[in-house]
Amino acid sequence: MALWDSVASVVSTGKLRQYRPTPEVASLIFAVYSNAMDVGSLIGARLAVGIPGPDATEDVIERLRQTQAQTLVVFSRNFTSPDQFTRLLRRLEERLERRLLVMVDHEGGRVVRFNRGVTHFPDAKAVGRTQDPDAVERQGATEAEELRRLGVHVNLAPCVDVVVEGSDPVIGDRSYGSDPARVSLLSVARIRGLQSRGVAACVKHFPGLGAVPRDPHLVLPTISLDWTAMRSTHLVPFEAAIRAGVAMVMSSHVCYPLLDDPQGLPATFSAHLIRDVLRQTLGFAGLILTDDLEMGALRTCGTIGEACVRATEAGHDLLLICSDLAAAQASSDALHEAYQSGRLSIAELEEIVHRVELARQQFLT
Image 1 (cartoon, rainbow, N blue to C red):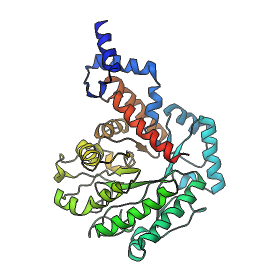
Image 2 (image 1 turned 180 degrees about the vertical axis):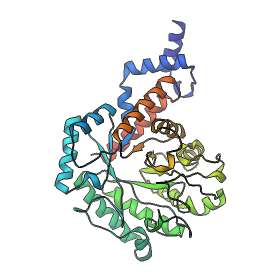
Image 3 (image 1 turned 90 degrees about the horizontal axis):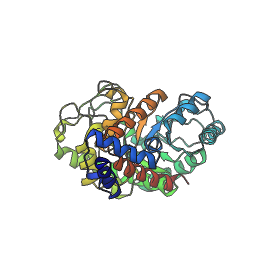
């Protein structure tokens, strides 16, 4: 009884965030919270998942129901026409009896998931060479209006990486260029345009992917730049975006060993880069997203569930699992176990879900 009274006191006084329980106490704390709320639903608020095709099949609906995922990442495989796509979203929400926050990579150029119903703008490299900020802001506003008509609430753009000569072409024409001031200027204009029309912008890939030597879709790369180079070039657009009120920031699956992290630790798992630099030093208060946790960069880093737990420890809010619904279920199970054991903080889960809910209130209307 004394142990249970101690647990109840910690929970009721709001000191849980600072409390580091033993596994036995953690299990009791989890029980207290589980009795008061649906922990599975809170975990589901953190999952951003993809589905395999253009149809809301019974299998897809059941898997989404089990994970309780509240965010959907859509791709060209989910789209055949505007009418089909809006029917897909409507059927999913009706069957699941919840609204879905829908996000898409809609960068322009080669990264556009919809082949109809939207304006196809040039890639960022071409825009960076030829357009002024007013034109880019109008582009963002047009994109937002078209995406909203399709039922999309988040554009996973712009890419604010500053390209360095000799880097892998994975970024290349997705960037506004190699001048951090111009990348910042155009990125902020795009953000203003998107968010002025009710679509959240998400800048990527923190702390900067422009110097990446290999494609993280395939392998785990390393960028060997120090803080001087990062602060003078690669962090500049992120700082500008944060000052402009960008809603979301996506991190990168890249190692930065000269930024005070161990060799082989990607930013995805770096509490130093995500919690200390992005959240604290840069003062970002919005949602922090992982890149797709199924990418090749993380295949040697353990299971998808372990990746989700480690990304949570680092400070991410939304966890992207863009292809495999079985992987999404495994991730949900791993997070549930980590919260129950005390490895992850239930109080912090509530804080994360509060941030998610604020974004949903702003962009899901």
